[in-house]
Length: 218
Image 1 (spheres, rainbow, N blue to C red):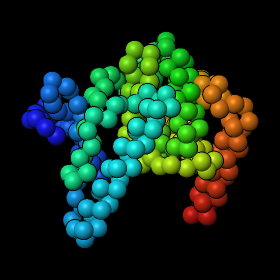
Image 2: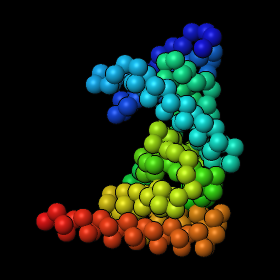
Image 3: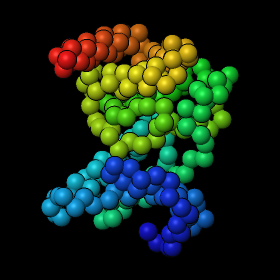
């Protein structure tokens, strides 16, 4: 990047990347830098970090193009395996659930619409959980595309919805039914009832497989 990047502090240390808040040319950004793994061969490690950085950036750019609200990509440093993106100032979705915010339904319906647009573009998120949704006003902003990929497979897309349902049911059981219904309403409004039924049927298959594994482990 041309110009000095000023470190404004650590945001998060993840399994494969470190997120820092930085300032560059008057812009407040997030630097997501994939860290080397000492157990991998250096050349292989470099290739993996580079390819994952490039894939994530491509997916985020494509998501923007199809109307999904997510951070804007400002710069991609393939040599350093880093993405510099727009800093989003807002709480994650869990804060609305905890506070029983009156706009939960509206925000989650919009989130469902965004997820449907993502899927229609042949993208699955891979880690579609409340902590990966920031909220600005009543607008959900989808973040962390590190596990995302390109696929039209109904299984990959159903896993996104299943992860969200499971996370909400486990942590917020009193509002989980209302939240999941709102997500599906938003999803159906974009994807249509047929696709939603396909997603729901596949989720039931995923749950059945999980129950079978659990019984087999006893």
